Image (cartoon, rainbow, N blue to C red; front, side, top):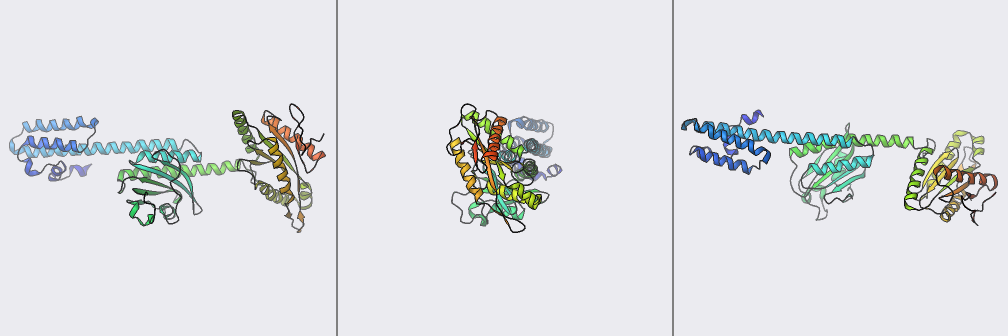
Length: 436
Protein backbone atom coordinates (compact mmCIF):
# COMPACT_ATOMS: atom_id res chain seq x y z
CA UNK A 1 0.00 0.00 0.00
CA UNK A 2 3.04 2.34 0.14
CA UNK A 3 2.26 3.60 -3.35
CA UNK A 4 -1.02 5.06 -2.05
CA UNK A 5 0.64 7.01 0.73
CA UNK A 6 3.23 8.34 -1.68
CA UNK A 7 0.63 9.87 -4.01
CA UNK A 8 1.11 13.61 -4.57
CA UNK A 9 -1.45 15.53 -2.64
CA UNK A 10 -2.68 17.29 -5.75
CA UNK A 11 -3.36 13.78 -7.15
CA UNK A 12 -5.29 12.90 -3.98
CA UNK A 13 -7.32 16.04 -4.36
CA UNK A 14 -8.15 15.13 -7.94
CA UNK A 15 -9.15 11.60 -6.88
CA UNK A 16 -11.61 13.09 -4.42
CA UNK A 17 -12.96 15.43 -7.05
CA UNK A 18 -11.63 18.47 -5.27
CA UNK A 19 -9.18 20.85 -6.89
CA UNK A 20 -6.42 22.57 -4.94
CA UNK A 21 -7.84 25.98 -5.88
CA UNK A 22 -11.21 25.17 -4.35
CA UNK A 23 -9.58 23.76 -1.22
CA UNK A 24 -8.24 27.22 -0.36
CA UNK A 25 -11.75 28.72 -0.35
CA UNK A 26 -13.09 27.07 2.77
CA UNK A 27 -12.59 23.94 4.75
CA UNK A 28 -16.30 23.17 4.95
CA UNK A 29 -16.57 23.23 1.19
CA UNK A 30 -13.68 20.72 1.06
CA UNK A 31 -15.48 18.54 3.57
CA UNK A 32 -18.74 18.57 1.64
CA UNK A 33 -17.03 17.85 -1.66
CA UNK A 34 -15.07 15.02 -0.09
CA UNK A 35 -18.22 13.49 1.36
CA UNK A 36 -19.98 13.64 -2.01
CA UNK A 37 -16.99 12.12 -3.78
CA UNK A 38 -16.85 9.21 -1.36
CA UNK A 39 -20.56 8.55 -1.82
CA UNK A 40 -20.16 8.55 -5.59
CA UNK A 41 -17.43 5.92 -5.27
CA UNK A 42 -20.07 3.43 -4.12
CA UNK A 43 -18.69 2.60 -0.70
CA UNK A 44 -20.60 -0.31 0.86
CA UNK A 45 -22.59 0.26 4.03
CA UNK A 46 -20.33 -1.87 6.20
CA UNK A 47 -17.38 0.45 5.40
CA UNK A 48 -19.30 3.73 5.36
CA UNK A 49 -19.23 4.32 9.11
CA UNK A 50 -15.47 3.99 9.26
CA UNK A 51 -14.94 6.41 6.39
CA UNK A 52 -17.40 8.91 7.82
CA UNK A 53 -15.52 8.71 11.10
CA UNK A 54 -12.40 9.78 9.23
CA UNK A 55 -14.35 12.77 7.92
CA UNK A 56 -15.23 13.69 11.50
CA UNK A 57 -11.53 13.58 12.31
CA UNK A 58 -11.03 16.06 9.49
CA UNK A 59 -13.59 18.42 11.05
CA UNK A 60 -12.03 18.10 14.50
CA UNK A 61 -8.54 18.70 13.16
CA UNK A 62 -9.59 21.84 11.33
CA UNK A 63 -10.90 23.40 14.51
CA UNK A 64 -7.48 23.04 16.14
CA UNK A 65 -5.39 24.59 13.35
CA UNK A 66 -4.99 28.09 12.01
CA UNK A 67 -6.15 29.03 8.54
CA UNK A 68 -2.74 28.57 6.98
CA UNK A 69 -2.64 24.95 8.06
CA UNK A 70 -6.16 23.95 7.11
CA UNK A 71 -5.28 22.98 3.58
CA UNK A 72 -2.29 20.92 4.70
CA UNK A 73 -4.21 19.05 7.40
CA UNK A 74 -7.23 18.57 5.16
CA UNK A 75 -5.16 17.13 2.37
CA UNK A 76 -3.24 14.87 4.74
CA UNK A 77 -6.36 13.41 6.26
CA UNK A 78 -8.06 13.20 2.89
CA UNK A 79 -5.09 11.15 1.73
CA UNK A 80 -5.64 8.84 4.69
CA UNK A 81 -9.27 8.46 3.69
CA UNK A 82 -8.27 7.47 0.17
CA UNK A 83 -5.69 5.05 1.56
CA UNK A 84 -8.20 3.50 3.95
CA UNK A 85 -10.77 3.07 1.20
CA UNK A 86 -8.22 1.48 -1.12
CA UNK A 87 -7.01 -0.79 1.67
CA UNK A 88 -10.54 -1.88 2.53
CA UNK A 89 -11.26 -2.60 -1.12
CA UNK A 90 -8.03 -4.56 -1.46
CA UNK A 91 -8.72 -6.60 1.68
CA UNK A 92 -12.26 -7.29 0.51
CA UNK A 93 -11.01 -8.38 -2.89
CA UNK A 94 -8.35 -10.69 -1.46
CA UNK A 95 -10.86 -12.15 0.99
CA UNK A 96 -13.22 -12.91 -1.89
CA UNK A 97 -10.41 -14.59 -3.81
CA UNK A 98 -9.38 -16.68 -0.80
CA UNK A 99 -12.99 -17.72 -0.21
CA UNK A 100 -13.32 -18.62 -3.86
CA UNK A 101 -10.10 -20.65 -3.72
CA UNK A 102 -11.27 -22.47 -0.58
CA UNK A 103 -14.64 -23.22 -2.15
CA UNK A 104 -12.98 -24.46 -5.32
CA UNK A 105 -10.59 -26.70 -3.43
CA UNK A 106 -13.41 -28.31 -1.47
CA UNK A 107 -15.67 -28.85 -4.46
CA UNK A 108 -13.07 -29.98 -6.95
CA UNK A 109 -11.39 -32.46 -4.61
CA UNK A 110 -14.57 -33.95 -3.16
CA UNK A 111 -15.14 -36.26 -6.12
CA UNK A 112 -13.18 -38.21 -8.71
CA UNK A 113 -16.21 -38.64 -10.94
CA UNK A 114 -15.53 -36.70 -14.16
CA UNK A 115 -19.08 -35.40 -14.78
CA UNK A 116 -19.31 -34.24 -11.15
CA UNK A 117 -15.97 -32.44 -11.38
CA UNK A 118 -16.82 -30.69 -14.64
CA UNK A 119 -20.23 -29.65 -13.32
CA UNK A 120 -18.59 -28.07 -10.27
CA UNK A 121 -16.14 -26.14 -12.46
CA UNK A 122 -18.78 -24.53 -14.68
CA UNK A 123 -20.92 -23.58 -11.67
CA UNK A 124 -17.97 -21.94 -9.91
CA UNK A 125 -16.96 -20.06 -13.05
CA UNK A 126 -20.50 -18.73 -13.37
CA UNK A 127 -20.26 -17.40 -9.79
CA UNK A 128 -16.92 -15.66 -10.24
CA UNK A 129 -17.66 -13.23 -13.08
CA UNK A 130 -20.55 -10.79 -13.33
CA UNK A 131 -22.79 -10.80 -16.41
CA UNK A 132 -21.68 -14.31 -17.36
CA UNK A 133 -23.88 -15.70 -20.13
CA UNK A 134 -22.40 -19.18 -20.50
CA UNK A 135 -19.48 -21.37 -19.43
CA UNK A 136 -18.24 -24.30 -21.50
CA UNK A 137 -15.55 -26.89 -20.81
CA UNK A 138 -14.06 -29.10 -23.50
CA UNK A 139 -11.58 -31.88 -22.79
CA UNK A 140 -8.56 -32.00 -25.08
CA UNK A 141 -6.83 -35.23 -26.01
CA UNK A 142 -4.89 -36.39 -29.06
CA UNK A 143 -5.54 -33.09 -30.81
CA UNK A 144 -9.32 -33.37 -30.49
CA UNK A 145 -11.79 -31.50 -28.32
CA UNK A 146 -14.60 -33.38 -26.61
CA UNK A 147 -17.53 -31.74 -24.86
CA UNK A 148 -17.24 -31.89 -21.09
CA UNK A 149 -19.82 -29.63 -19.48
CA UNK A 150 -21.78 -26.42 -20.00
CA UNK A 151 -23.90 -24.03 -17.99
CA UNK A 152 -25.89 -21.07 -19.26
CA UNK A 153 -27.34 -18.20 -17.28
CA UNK A 154 -30.84 -19.65 -17.74
CA UNK A 155 -29.73 -22.93 -16.15
CA UNK A 156 -29.41 -24.88 -19.40
CA UNK A 157 -26.58 -27.43 -19.48
CA UNK A 158 -26.50 -27.94 -23.24
CA UNK A 159 -23.63 -26.55 -25.34
CA UNK A 160 -24.40 -23.52 -27.47
CA UNK A 161 -22.30 -24.83 -30.36
CA UNK A 162 -19.55 -27.27 -31.27
CA UNK A 163 -15.92 -26.06 -31.38
CA UNK A 164 -14.89 -24.81 -34.82
CA UNK A 165 -11.53 -25.86 -36.25
CA UNK A 166 -10.66 -22.20 -36.81
CA UNK A 167 -12.43 -20.92 -33.72
CA UNK A 168 -11.48 -19.78 -30.24
CA UNK A 169 -11.54 -23.12 -28.43
CA UNK A 170 -9.16 -24.90 -30.81
CA UNK A 171 -6.91 -21.83 -30.90
CA UNK A 172 -6.60 -21.92 -27.10
CA UNK A 173 -6.11 -25.71 -27.00
CA UNK A 174 -3.39 -25.69 -29.64
CA UNK A 175 -1.62 -22.53 -28.49
CA UNK A 176 -1.89 -23.17 -24.76
CA UNK A 177 -2.48 -19.47 -24.05
CA UNK A 178 -5.45 -17.51 -22.76
CA UNK A 179 -7.31 -15.52 -25.41
CA UNK A 180 -9.60 -12.59 -24.55
CA UNK A 181 -12.11 -11.45 -27.16
CA UNK A 182 -13.52 -8.07 -26.16
CA UNK A 183 -16.08 -7.97 -28.97
CA UNK A 184 -17.15 -11.22 -30.60
CA UNK A 185 -18.70 -9.48 -33.60
CA UNK A 186 -15.46 -7.89 -34.83
CA UNK A 187 -12.84 -10.52 -33.92
CA UNK A 188 -11.13 -12.69 -36.60
CA UNK A 189 -11.81 -15.88 -34.60
CA UNK A 190 -15.53 -15.21 -34.95
CA UNK A 191 -15.68 -14.34 -38.61
CA UNK A 192 -19.06 -15.11 -40.19
CA UNK A 193 -20.67 -16.22 -36.94
CA UNK A 194 -24.41 -15.68 -36.35
CA UNK A 195 -25.53 -12.16 -35.44
CA UNK A 196 -26.82 -13.31 -32.06
CA UNK A 197 -23.26 -14.18 -31.04
CA UNK A 198 -22.26 -10.99 -29.28
CA UNK A 199 -20.63 -9.69 -26.13
CA UNK A 200 -17.17 -10.72 -24.94
CA UNK A 201 -15.55 -14.08 -24.22
CA UNK A 202 -12.41 -15.52 -22.71
CA UNK A 203 -10.84 -18.88 -23.54
CA UNK A 204 -8.53 -20.34 -20.88
CA UNK A 205 -6.34 -23.44 -21.34
CA UNK A 206 -6.56 -25.98 -18.53
CA UNK A 207 -2.97 -27.17 -18.23
CA UNK A 208 -1.37 -29.87 -16.14
CA UNK A 209 2.43 -29.75 -16.18
CA UNK A 210 2.36 -27.65 -19.38
CA UNK A 211 0.03 -30.12 -21.09
CA UNK A 212 -3.39 -28.82 -22.14
CA UNK A 213 -6.06 -31.19 -20.82
CA UNK A 214 -9.00 -28.96 -21.61
CA UNK A 215 -10.32 -25.50 -22.43
CA UNK A 216 -12.76 -23.36 -20.45
CA UNK A 217 -14.70 -20.66 -22.28
CA UNK A 218 -16.63 -17.98 -20.42
CA UNK A 219 -18.81 -15.58 -22.39
CA UNK A 220 -20.44 -12.36 -21.16
CA UNK A 221 -23.25 -10.18 -22.40
CA UNK A 222 -21.06 -7.09 -22.02
CA UNK A 223 -18.25 -5.85 -24.24
CA UNK A 224 -14.68 -5.18 -23.15
CA UNK A 225 -11.85 -6.91 -21.37
CA UNK A 226 -11.80 -8.70 -18.03
CA UNK A 227 -10.55 -6.97 -14.89
CA UNK A 228 -7.34 -7.99 -13.14
CA UNK A 229 -9.39 -9.41 -10.27
CA UNK A 230 -11.56 -11.50 -12.63
CA UNK A 231 -8.50 -12.80 -14.45
CA UNK A 232 -6.87 -13.80 -11.14
CA UNK A 233 -9.98 -15.69 -10.04
CA UNK A 234 -10.37 -17.41 -13.40
CA UNK A 235 -6.71 -18.42 -13.37
CA UNK A 236 -7.14 -19.84 -9.88
CA UNK A 237 -10.13 -21.79 -11.13
CA UNK A 238 -8.33 -23.03 -14.23
CA UNK A 239 -5.35 -24.27 -12.20
CA UNK A 240 -7.63 -26.14 -9.80
CA UNK A 241 -9.74 -27.43 -12.67
CA UNK A 242 -6.75 -28.85 -14.56
CA UNK A 243 -5.64 -30.80 -11.47
CA UNK A 244 -9.18 -32.06 -10.81
CA UNK A 245 -9.65 -33.15 -14.44
CA UNK A 246 -6.29 -34.94 -14.47
CA UNK A 247 -7.15 -36.76 -11.24
CA UNK A 248 -10.58 -37.73 -12.55
CA UNK A 249 -9.04 -38.97 -15.82
CA UNK A 250 -6.54 -41.09 -13.92
CA UNK A 251 -9.37 -42.46 -11.82
CA UNK A 252 -11.27 -43.36 -14.98
CA UNK A 253 -8.27 -45.23 -16.37
CA UNK A 254 -7.76 -47.16 -13.14
CA UNK A 255 -11.48 -47.90 -12.89
CA UNK A 256 -11.60 -49.17 -16.45
CA UNK A 257 -8.70 -51.50 -15.73
CA UNK A 258 -10.36 -52.71 -12.54
CA UNK A 259 -13.60 -53.43 -14.41
CA UNK A 260 -12.12 -54.68 -17.70
CA UNK A 261 -10.97 -58.10 -18.75
CA UNK A 262 -7.25 -57.98 -19.51
CA UNK A 263 -7.48 -60.37 -22.50
CA UNK A 264 -10.53 -59.10 -24.39
CA UNK A 265 -11.00 -55.57 -23.06
CA UNK A 266 -14.67 -56.31 -22.36
CA UNK A 267 -16.21 -55.69 -18.91
CA UNK A 268 -15.22 -58.39 -16.44
CA UNK A 269 -17.18 -60.38 -13.86
CA UNK A 270 -16.96 -57.56 -11.30
CA UNK A 271 -18.47 -55.09 -13.75
CA UNK A 272 -21.13 -57.63 -14.69
CA UNK A 273 -22.21 -58.12 -11.07
CA UNK A 274 -22.54 -54.37 -10.50
CA UNK A 275 -24.47 -53.84 -13.73
CA UNK A 276 -26.78 -56.72 -12.87
CA UNK A 277 -27.50 -55.17 -9.47
CA UNK A 278 -28.42 -51.88 -11.14
CA UNK A 279 -30.71 -53.68 -13.57
CA UNK A 280 -32.52 -55.30 -10.66
CA UNK A 281 -32.97 -51.95 -8.93
CA UNK A 282 -34.35 -50.37 -12.12
CA UNK A 283 -36.65 -53.30 -12.87
CA UNK A 284 -38.09 -53.33 -9.36
CA UNK A 285 -38.67 -49.58 -9.48
CA UNK A 286 -40.28 -49.55 -12.94
CA UNK A 287 -41.94 -52.95 -12.91
CA UNK A 288 -40.32 -53.86 -16.25
CA UNK A 289 -38.56 -57.11 -17.05
CA UNK A 290 -35.05 -57.61 -18.36
CA UNK A 291 -33.19 -60.60 -19.79
CA UNK A 292 -29.78 -62.18 -19.62
CA UNK A 293 -28.13 -64.65 -21.97
CA UNK A 294 -25.18 -66.76 -20.88
CA UNK A 295 -23.14 -68.07 -23.81
CA UNK A 296 -20.30 -70.52 -24.24
CA UNK A 297 -18.16 -71.07 -27.34
CA UNK A 298 -18.33 -74.42 -29.08
CA UNK A 299 -15.02 -75.73 -30.40
CA UNK A 300 -12.76 -73.30 -28.57
CA UNK A 301 -10.92 -76.03 -26.61
CA UNK A 302 -9.68 -77.43 -29.92
CA UNK A 303 -8.18 -74.02 -30.78
CA UNK A 304 -6.16 -73.98 -27.55
CA UNK A 305 -5.10 -77.59 -27.97
CA UNK A 306 -4.01 -77.06 -31.59
CA UNK A 307 -2.44 -73.57 -31.53
CA UNK A 308 -1.77 -72.86 -27.87
CA UNK A 309 -3.21 -70.30 -25.45
CA UNK A 310 -1.53 -67.35 -27.19
CA UNK A 311 -3.57 -67.89 -30.34
CA UNK A 312 -6.53 -68.82 -28.18
CA UNK A 313 -6.40 -65.42 -26.47
CA UNK A 314 -6.26 -63.69 -29.87
CA UNK A 315 -9.33 -65.63 -31.00
CA UNK A 316 -11.21 -64.68 -27.84
CA UNK A 317 -10.28 -61.02 -28.19
CA UNK A 318 -11.35 -60.83 -31.82
CA UNK A 319 -14.48 -62.94 -31.38
CA UNK A 320 -15.76 -61.26 -28.22
CA UNK A 321 -15.33 -57.79 -29.73
CA UNK A 322 -16.99 -59.03 -32.91
CA UNK A 323 -19.92 -60.09 -30.76
CA UNK A 324 -20.10 -56.67 -29.14
CA UNK A 325 -20.72 -55.05 -32.52
CA UNK A 326 -24.34 -54.51 -33.42
CA UNK A 327 -25.62 -54.57 -29.86
CA UNK A 328 -27.93 -51.84 -28.61
CA UNK A 329 -26.26 -49.08 -26.60
CA UNK A 330 -28.35 -50.14 -23.61
CA UNK A 331 -27.10 -53.75 -23.78
CA UNK A 332 -24.16 -54.91 -21.67
CA UNK A 333 -21.80 -57.68 -22.80
CA UNK A 334 -19.19 -59.03 -20.38
CA UNK A 335 -16.73 -61.89 -20.17
CA UNK A 336 -18.03 -64.23 -17.51
CA UNK A 337 -14.93 -66.38 -17.43
CA UNK A 338 -12.98 -68.67 -19.75
CA UNK A 339 -14.79 -68.69 -23.10
CA UNK A 340 -18.13 -67.69 -21.59
CA UNK A 341 -20.02 -64.44 -22.25
CA UNK A 342 -23.00 -62.90 -20.49
CA UNK A 343 -25.32 -60.41 -22.16
CA UNK A 344 -27.67 -58.19 -20.13
CA UNK A 345 -30.56 -56.67 -22.08
CA UNK A 346 -32.47 -53.87 -20.38
CA UNK A 347 -36.27 -53.74 -20.65
CA UNK A 348 -36.33 -56.91 -22.72
CA UNK A 349 -39.02 -59.57 -22.51
CA UNK A 350 -38.59 -63.27 -23.33
CA UNK A 351 -39.86 -63.04 -26.93
CA UNK A 352 -37.40 -60.22 -27.64
CA UNK A 353 -34.58 -62.16 -25.97
CA UNK A 354 -35.33 -65.14 -28.21
CA UNK A 355 -35.03 -62.94 -31.28
CA UNK A 356 -31.68 -61.65 -30.03
CA UNK A 357 -30.56 -65.25 -29.57
CA UNK A 358 -31.36 -66.02 -33.19
CA UNK A 359 -29.43 -62.99 -34.40
CA UNK A 360 -26.42 -63.98 -32.31
CA UNK A 361 -26.36 -67.44 -33.86
CA UNK A 362 -26.56 -65.90 -37.34
CA UNK A 363 -23.71 -63.54 -36.46
CA UNK A 364 -21.53 -66.37 -35.13
CA UNK A 365 -22.11 -68.40 -38.30
CA UNK A 366 -20.43 -65.61 -40.29
CA UNK A 367 -17.34 -65.43 -38.07
CA UNK A 368 -14.00 -66.91 -39.05
CA UNK A 369 -10.43 -66.42 -37.83
CA UNK A 370 -7.31 -67.17 -39.85
CA UNK A 371 -4.93 -69.34 -37.82
CA UNK A 372 -1.11 -69.10 -38.05
CA UNK A 373 -1.17 -72.00 -40.52
CA UNK A 374 -3.76 -70.03 -42.53
CA UNK A 375 -6.52 -72.46 -41.65
CA UNK A 376 -9.92 -70.88 -41.07
CA UNK A 377 -11.06 -71.26 -37.48
CA UNK A 378 -14.84 -71.55 -37.17
CA UNK A 379 -16.64 -71.45 -33.85
CA UNK A 380 -20.12 -72.24 -32.64
CA UNK A 381 -22.06 -70.94 -29.66
CA UNK A 382 -24.61 -72.25 -27.20
CA UNK A 383 -26.64 -70.19 -24.77
CA UNK A 384 -29.09 -70.07 -21.89
CA UNK A 385 -31.77 -67.39 -21.52
CA UNK A 386 -33.29 -66.19 -18.24
CA UNK A 387 -35.76 -63.34 -17.66
CA UNK A 388 -36.54 -61.33 -14.54
CA UNK A 389 -38.81 -61.99 -12.68
CA UNK A 390 -39.92 -65.24 -14.34
CA UNK A 391 -36.68 -67.13 -13.71
CA UNK A 392 -35.20 -65.40 -10.68
CA UNK A 393 -35.78 -62.66 -8.12
CA UNK A 394 -32.10 -62.07 -7.28
CA UNK A 395 -28.91 -61.67 -9.28
CA UNK A 396 -27.59 -65.02 -8.11
CA UNK A 397 -30.85 -66.82 -8.92
CA UNK A 398 -31.09 -65.33 -12.39
CA UNK A 399 -27.48 -66.17 -13.26
CA UNK A 400 -27.98 -69.67 -11.88
CA UNK A 401 -31.08 -70.14 -14.01
CA UNK A 402 -29.33 -68.95 -17.19
CA UNK A 403 -26.28 -71.08 -16.40
CA UNK A 404 -28.48 -74.15 -15.93
CA UNK A 405 -30.11 -73.52 -19.32
CA UNK A 406 -26.65 -73.11 -20.88
CA UNK A 407 -25.52 -76.40 -19.35
CA UNK A 408 -28.52 -78.19 -20.88
CA UNK A 409 -27.82 -76.61 -24.24
CA UNK A 410 -24.15 -77.68 -24.18
CA UNK A 411 -25.13 -81.22 -23.19
CA UNK A 412 -28.26 -81.83 -25.23
CA UNK A 413 -28.67 -79.04 -27.83
CA UNK A 414 -25.26 -77.71 -28.75
CA UNK A 415 -25.46 -74.66 -30.98
CA UNK A 416 -28.87 -73.62 -29.60
CA UNK A 417 -30.18 -71.14 -27.04
CA UNK A 418 -32.43 -72.73 -24.42
CA UNK A 419 -34.74 -71.01 -21.95
CA UNK A 420 -34.33 -71.43 -18.21
CA UNK A 421 -36.86 -73.40 -16.22
CA UNK A 422 -39.67 -71.21 -14.95
CA UNK A 423 -40.14 -70.63 -11.24
CA UNK A 424 -43.90 -71.07 -11.64
CA UNK A 425 -44.78 -73.18 -14.65
CA UNK A 426 -43.13 -74.67 -17.73
CA UNK A 427 -42.72 -72.25 -20.62
CA UNK A 428 -44.22 -73.09 -23.99
CA UNK A 429 -41.52 -71.77 -26.30
CA UNK A 430 -41.80 -73.29 -29.80
CA UNK A 431 -38.57 -71.82 -31.14
CA UNK A 432 -36.18 -73.00 -28.44
CA UNK A 433 -37.91 -75.83 -26.52
CA UNK A 434 -36.56 -76.82 -23.15
CA UNK A 435 -34.46 -79.99 -23.39
CA UNK A 436 -34.63 -82.31 -20.39
